[in-house]
Image (cartoon, rainbow, N blue to C red; front, side, top):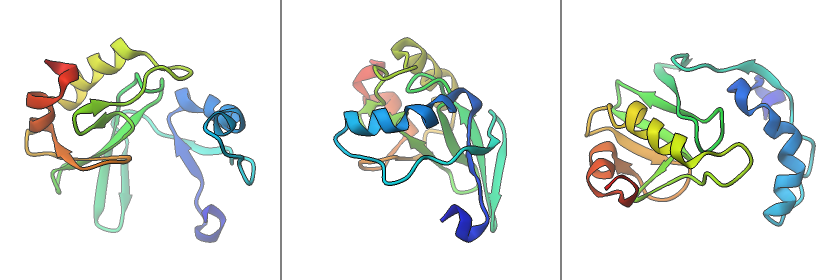
Length: 142
């Protein structure tokens, strides 16, 4: 798909090591990669704005799940795409290579819980939630 649309893979430089780790990680989770991961074409940084069509997303660095974990915040639509950082009633794993539980908790509090309570959180998997709900109900923050 990257070639089809003339795109390149993008991520935070601190997570570039995952490209070399991908085959080993895939085997750990019980599957084999069909092709080698592509190299990064561009690094994303905290505060970068990603624009497509009429949509703008701000990259917010929230290390802990991995050193380069980024979430993407759309101020205009009052929503955030949290990947594996924040879930309804939970947080991302911090026990994989490069993860750090204390750092994850700290950065969710200092970087995400400052967003408006009505911000809808769309995690990488599972049901959506809101920042307000997670601040009030998530057992990791009580």
